[in-house]
Length: 545
Image (cartoon, rainbow, N blue to C red; front, side):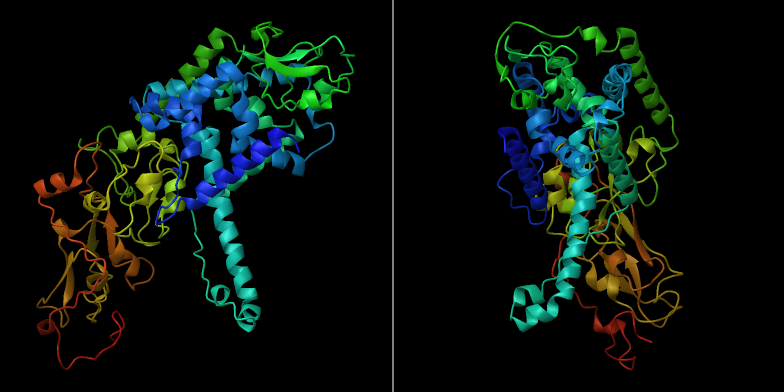
């Protein structure tokens, strides 16, 4: 096993460890979003689209700086996306796959990643972020967090069920009573199909994504054209062609003395396969680089790609779902689009969010779900709350602390509680008390902010619920626990959501009349005078018939 494979293995394991640690309570000694911060496209693309300097994304520029010296080492030694593709290449390996494309086709395809890069940057200039569509660390985090992790938990749950008789017989209580939380996410079939396609592209070429499509790789290719650490071939070379044949990036073409450094990922496969041991990597200034014009698109095409990206941004801005400013009338905000607590203003939120899915994976109640097209095409995969799936826990603020770009602010627990995501309201024609005249206390009992009041009205024989808007944070506990099926009788909408890019939620909330006081234990009991002592008795809430 060579050093590169060891490095890839360590980085992938560390990446998966941090992903696993992105959970409530957050206890990792290392930031869970470390690898996302290393992606140069996430760093540059997000800063351009958000028009802000984001300190947490500075490591991406360090990677670019190291690329000037080491070449595209990140692709070959660190990137979990590249490692995953390498694994899939071995799984789906097809003999002579690299020769299924002709030289002319390969030369044309090599320019694709530059078009993707400048398309994204062109859109970013107009504040539309397409980074999520192609940034490798965003994609791979989404794959492992929203697809593979839930599947593994589900399989583990089945395994524990099947082995329960044996674990009981052996007295293994920790296995007998273990109940792993099975997460469920929307859009999973699209994500799975996308990665299935990426993995199957090995039919045409090893590391097809890295070679031809990855925009982060394109950025590093532009900076890694003349690295300080270079490949050298001695006069002992016999032109056997083994290095050209085995190079996973096709960075050696026809002449073994020449190297296309912008494509080389420094994997040193050529060193290992050379029968004459004529190849090595060492510092040097002498260049064997093939002319750039063969691999970098013309200036005209680069401008065209950026212009198309800018055009896509203009179309996105003029779409009916576009939000210019949260405070300007005329915006169409879908009633179900409830952003996580601490989410910055919608336009800034979309320009910063890279849709990595880390906040969704970390959410303990599974309430955060990827959006499909509710917020327009440019809002796809961004997180929203789905209260019917789970409430936002009072004592949890993990989503903001794992967000790599600040799209969700990292707030203290107290500040987070005041970051109202919306307001709940009762649908009388569905409510058991209002419509069916039956006693039900569920929303009253579960509300952690005491934002539900029960009142007597003339037309009903039982107390009915009212929402106190100034006490409601929109956490969704009422909607989640409502016993009415086929849609809750009390729902949360993003009405009166408090979203700020800077400043204190507590001070702002108090200034606008909010009055939040959390009661996580939910020990509220309704006043006795509201209920008929001759009533149906101590039946469970919601089942008083």
